[in-house]
Amino acid sequence: LPMALTAENLAEKYSISRQECDEFALESQQRWAAAQQAGHFDAEMAPVEVKGRKGPEQFSVDEHPRPESTVEKMGSLKAVFKKDGTVTAANASGICDGAGAVVLASEEAIKQHNLTPLARVVSYGVSGVDPTIMGIGPVTAFQQALKLAKLS
Image (cartoon, rainbow, N blue to C red):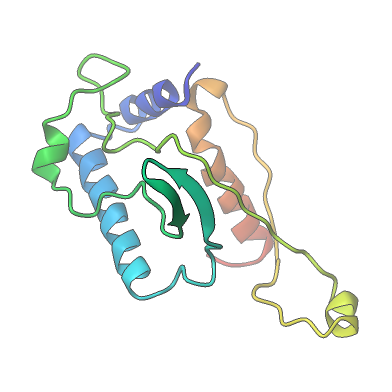
C-alpha cells in the first residue's frame, strides 16, 4: 500500500480536509523558508558539487520547498491517489534524495574525546500500527517516549 494511500486513510479516519492539508503544508513550507533565511540550516547542510545542465553546480540549499506557494495554488491541483482525496503534489512528502547522520556517544566518550553534545537522549518509544494507517505510528511512539520521560 503506497504511503500516500495510508495518508488518505488517515485523512478519512480523522476527518482531515483537503483544505486543512493544504494549509498545514503551506505553513510547513513557510516555516522552512524562515528557518533557512535565519541560517538555522547552515551548519546542517554540507555543500555538494553536482552535475548541472551547464556544468558543475554547488548544491547547498534544499531545492524541494516551495514557500512562495499559496493555498489557492495548492487547491487548484488534483488529488493524486484517490478521487476527491486530500493528497496532492503540493501537500505530500516530496520524493527526493537526502542523507543524514547522527553520532551517539556515551558520557564517558564525550569526556574522553572532548566533545560538545548538541542533544541528549532522555527517552524513546517504539510503536507498531495497522499498515493501512502507518503514518500514525510516530504519534503513539512520541506519546510513549514523552510518558517515559515524564514530559508532556
